Length: 418
Image (cartoon, rainbow, N blue to C red; front, side, top):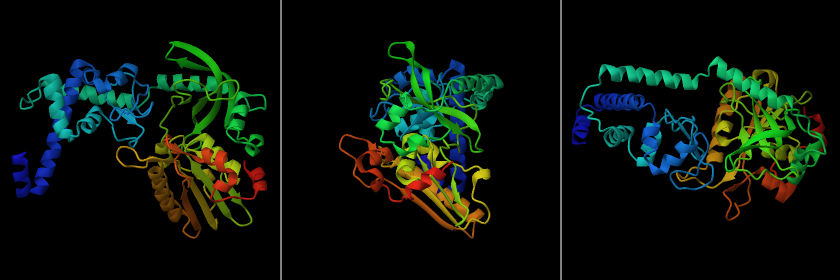
């Protein structure tokens, strides 16, 4: 510590580079040791806070920092090999490997975290140069990471077959279906007769009941998630009871494994609305399917569902449905959930919405410089009830109706949506 400070005063630029290089060397050393024991579980399983997450990976557990929530944290892969994790209260790429998450857990820098991992779990002397076997292990680790990111053709085919099977047995939503009953209970009336084609009902969808260790079949609302080009990518499932209640299972809402990267995609419930006479283009984006449908129900404005706050931040609009070159006005409305601040003081939903606003403002200003832009972020105005972690736009619909929404079109414009 004293040496680093002295060197910093002597040559800040050189020391910064040296510290980065030293940190990377220690990270590589950790990777070599992980390959040597054939699993990062060797480390995580010895830490009580992470042991359960290792056992049930890639399923979710409460926050490993505060124990809050039921489904906050999980390892990205079943084997937890790279240590890549997802925490719902942090940016999606915050914890790309085990060093990142342990640094947050210990409250240390990546450099100090690597030293602690190597000392506590491997008894490693960091002053001993890496051996030839270590160098090969580092390359092996890099290859494993690459293969975990890039799906094999076999894995892609496997995922596509599962998606096609679910899609094949999914039918349009009818008045006698569990999905219709579910949506009715969520306050939907007008949109029930104008449901988008990308929402359907699968009467018998498989669900693995972990508590009882058996598979069960139940109805589900099926929503198609499209990529940033507008092509079908994966399927979001909302499992239901036959009476239209949400399914009484651990994870009633689940996304199927996609055949490619989901970043930039969304559930495109309705096409953007373009008025030929006034040359005005309009679209909204929210988090969940029920939120998006609530916006449409109350306002007649088309709205997409990003499926989560993190995916909302990266939503892209395919070129073929962007405004035409002669557009005069663009309305882009972002409907954020209202949630309490997380442990870091961050309002996750609002932060994601503001990031999307910044990105879309830059896009529209660059591509349509002559158009009048209206890009707004809306958040429910009512306070969060005690005991709840947040409120969304379906809560607003149920409690306030259309009066709770800050913008609204004429009700007959709902029929114009495609």
